[in-house]
Every structure is written in C-alpha cells, then in structure tokens.
Length: 167
Image 1 (cartoon, helix red, strand yellow):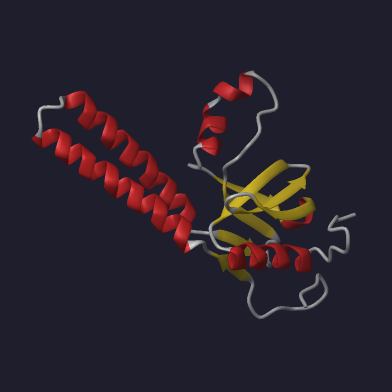
Image 2 (cartoon, one colour):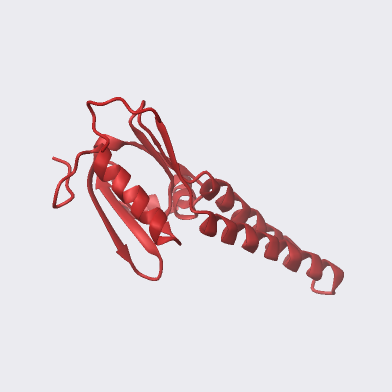
C-alpha cells in the first residue's frame, strides 16, 4: 500500500490507454486518406482542407492521449488529458482554454491531495470521475483494467476510505 509517510521506489506512475490513443490515430489517418481521395477526385479544395483540419485535430488529440495519465509522487501531482469539462458560465463556453479542454487538446495538472471525491462507472466506456477544488472531470478509458488501476492508485495515494472521499 502507498501512503504519504512511506518512501516508494517509483515516483512517476504512467497509466496509458493504448486502445483509446490508437483509435484517435486511426481516425486521423482516415481523414488524411479522405483528403487524398478528395484531392484525386473532383470534390474541390474545400473538402481537402476540411478533411486535413479534422486529421490535424485528431492527431493533436492522439498526442495528448498517448502520454496517458501521469501521477508524480515526488511532486504529488496528477496530469491528464482534459475532456468532458463543464463550463462555469456562458462566457467560458467561448474561451479558447475551454474549447481546448473540451476538444481534448490540453493537459490538466492538479495536486493529488486536491482530489476530494473519486468514483468509477461504466456508460459505453469506462470512466473515473474526480472532484475537487479544481472542478470536476470525467476521465474516459476503453479498458476496464486501466480505469481500475488509476482509480486504485489515487485512492491509495490519498488514503481515501469508504465512501471514497478525501477529508
């Protein structure tokens, strides 16, 4: 068991979700292929540009997801690709930072000790939901084992009991 008072040999934990990362890379390659097909056909330059924009978007999402979920025990930080973010105001819906979070183009780093609640559930994909003074985030996984690995690690690091709430 990991707790705040013991030394641990490994200080950086990386929990990747290769299925999710590869799916984003596959979609990016698919859009590049559509752009090439459009370029060879008579579909027009607009379609080529549109497909290349979608390819770039999914490639950027792949870049964020491939790094996985990082927990640094020496710094006590948790870094993850942002997605499924809720806006706090109407004005925030149009801010570049919010749009980058929703599109999954930005990584969020929070202090592990700031995580006050954690839960996991299944709804088509496997999710870990974390809440704290930083807000609430849903972390999506395609693999149940990876979701459970992250959930257990955060619970152990924060010495969270039942219910899983950090006092």
